[in-house]
Amino acid sequence: MLKRVLLSETDLPDRWYNIHPDLPAPLPGPLNPLTMAPLQPGDLADLLPRKVIEHEFTQERWVEIPERVRDVYKIWRPSPLVRAERLERALDTPAHIYFKFEGVSPSGSHKPNTAVVQAYYAAEEGVRRLTTETGAGQWGSALSFAGALFGLEVNVYMVRASFEQKPYRKSLMRSWGAEVYSSPTERTEAGRRILAKDPDSPGSIGIAISEAVADAMSRDDTKFALGSIMNNVLLHQTVIGLEAKKQMEIMGEYPDVVIGCVGGGSNYAGLAYPFMQDRLSGERPRTRFVAAEPDACPTLTRGKLAYDYPDTAGLTPPLYMHTLGHDFIPGSIHAGGLRYHGDAPSLCLLKEHGLVEARAFPQTDVFDAAVTFARSEGFVIAPESSHGLKAAIVEALAARAAGQERVVLFNISGHGNFDLAAFDSYLAGTMENPTVTNEQIAESLSVLPSPASSV
Ligand SMILES: *Cc1c(COP(=O)(O)O)cnc(C)c1O
Image 1 (cartoon, rainbow, N blue to C red):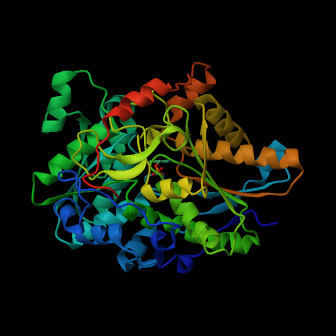
Image 2 (spheres, helix red, strand yellow):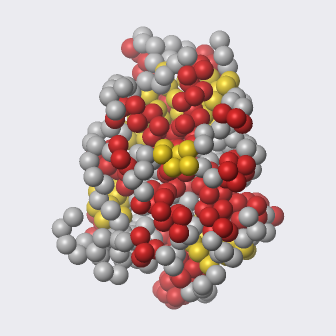
Image 3 (cartoon, rainbow, N blue to C red):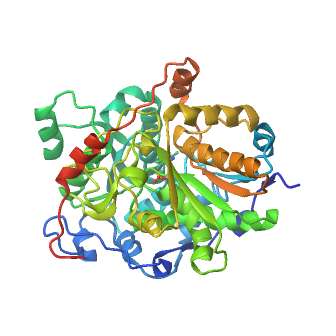
């Protein structure tokens, strides 16, 4: 039995897969935040590199990966695909469990798969400086790494709560040469407005996006980079699933269920979409797709499908997505990358059409799964990724109950080496399970933007 499939660098995909031409229905497009009319590519010209905008709107099924991006990917790609046979034994399940491991990248997650692309195109177009937001620090780290490779100055607006609680992510970003600010800052109008209301604001990803966008808009030499939810980000992440498909083929198996955690949806779409293509084409009509999210931030399971701003101040184009409201501030959970109020529009559409199932899990169940995994397969994985793991375990146990073979594939979006304080809290028995009431959700949903005309 094969344990692990490592492709060689000559097997690295040379194109990304764009799911848009294969979606079961037309995707409602983004809106211009000023006029609420459908967004035109040119509306983004001050904010994003031209090629990134092109990727955002393209309807081409296959998009070529530039040679210089593939060269950087080769530092850690193709990433391993591993059969979790020790976990299978620990669960006493007939299921075959596989994981794709994105924790091998320099910054420790899947995020460099798109950071490298965005930095490359920015540098090619003569941009000198990139701004971005970061929650727990994974995206800020990825962009700092990518910026260093392409000679760009990177400025990161980091959510204050994490800025204070996660000093090592800051060290990592600074090692790659980035500048890191505690958001809300006094540097932008959006930040000053929040601080005037609440000088102790812990910040949020939505606020940090507003600040990074305002900064980028104020300077000609600067563009903005976003680490999830956008079509272009999901496109770049499909390198994960394209590799995984080849690797599963070498294993001689095809997944019955494809699983991942969802913050904004990029690592999950990255793994799932190349398999979803087979489902949509009718070639593999029975493959199931399961997205896992936290109870504390249940966008896919309890959010509303509507237009909403990706950021708190309303500077960014409203997207048609499952949202908890752009003002929503979730309870403090350790999976910082899953504390986001919205999800990628294409993933929401697939969920709406019954092609993706969503599950929400309480925090301690997720860490229980993470510890089971560490004690069987060895890796201490990120709290975010542990949501996908938890869903994979649920599938494996259902297979056991049904006495059924089932091939389960899930994504490990990152390692947990910077999250050990969270594991301490779990092991000490002091970890809490924040949830959210329907009233809280209804309140933050009461301020959604409305489109100019019917869509
Ligand atoms: C950012 C992050 C996530 C969530 O983002 P997606 O866009 O949903 O992938 C998940 N896992 C890790 C390790 C992350 O850093």
